[in-house]
Amino acid sequence: MLHWECLYASRGEVPVAGLDEAGRGPLAGPVVAAAVILPPEDCYPVALIDSKKLTPARREAAFEFLRDLPGTAIGVGIVEAEEIDRINILQATRKAMLAALAALRVAPLAILIDAVFLPGLKIPQQNLVRGEEASVSIAAASIIAKVTRDRIMVEADRRHPAYGFARHKGYGTPQHLAALKEHGPSPIHRQTFRPVRECAHRL
Image (spheres, rainbow, N blue to C red):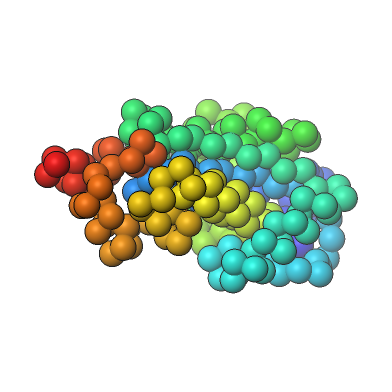
């Protein structure tokens, strides 16, 4: 365990859940949050670090390891693009995180969160900047959220092949922006995000 998990464990306040999201910045697709409670191990046979620092193959391996690791609890929350447009991305992220917590099979007694505060929770929460580096539970949550969302976007690519979602996962790459200009927004684009809105207005 890294130091934040050790702090809570030393107080007898386990289980502690790490919480993170994937997909706040893209122009299309959902925002996905994951909550993970890990067993109290000192080390793990795969790299449980910030998902952005792992290759796709290593993220997939870590994802499968976490799903099969005895004593691990995982919850996932997903908020689709239509609702992101309706309530804004910050509120959608919070909603996805609360759904991920509610999906855990074990109720945590404390929460470690990467750079988001969840108002109204009745259990302690510690907001950590660059939380994937301070907490192995947050790092695990980032892996679950990222792989889950990437798989959703690969499936979306099959339904909407003109945009290249399998490659860029909805982020605003030059290829994605060019496809937006040519084809206009798809049903899974976030209509309130400026590049999408501007392309829609030009059609």
